[in-house]
Image 1 (cartoon, rainbow, N blue to C red):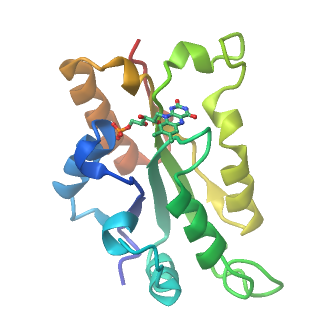
Image 2: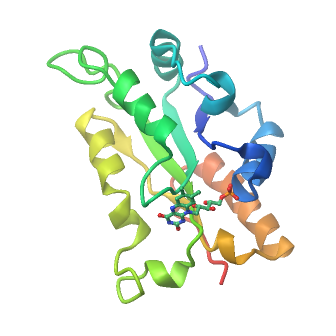
Length: 187
Ligand SMILES: Cc1cc2nc3c(=O)[nH]c(=O)nc-3n(C[C@H](O)[C@H](O)[C@H](O)COP(=O)(O)O)c2cc1C
């Protein structure tokens, strides 16, 4: 039973070319005493998700973080597929069968766009938390607790090494604390 560990489900279509998700992953890999790392693309290169294995992994953990790069203001497709196939009726929802009820589920998101553009008065008018509402309501629908998002913005604009290091450190702190909202602002 890994209930004391945090399950981090990493979804990145090309982690080798990644900047921030790879960096976050490296931090997690140094801390496997507190996290279980589960990489969807590495586990399922053919896209055939083992639903039973995924559900078992979820049941074994009380706190789950979905880590991914923002794609069209949403999740990468494999993580959407994972939601569709794993969060099934009779497992995640349905009267008396909400097996993930009470678990804490959060998101760690990287964004190519700068933080300033994600302000209400910014270029796109919506904050990241607003854009993450479909995920939030999904988590609440299955009677789990939504944790405030951890984010790193502006990745496509380049992040100085020092900021990258600082953000990676904050990510680990977020993972450890899971109650603090941290944001990396990389303008
Ligand atoms: C198909 C696609 C869609 C994307 N959509 C968004 C988006 O909606 N908002 C955003 O801020 N960045 C978007 N990006 C940029 C990625 O989020 C960014 O490159 C990623 O978070 C960087 O993380 P990485 O270094 O781990 O790859 C998109 C990138 C791709 C390839």
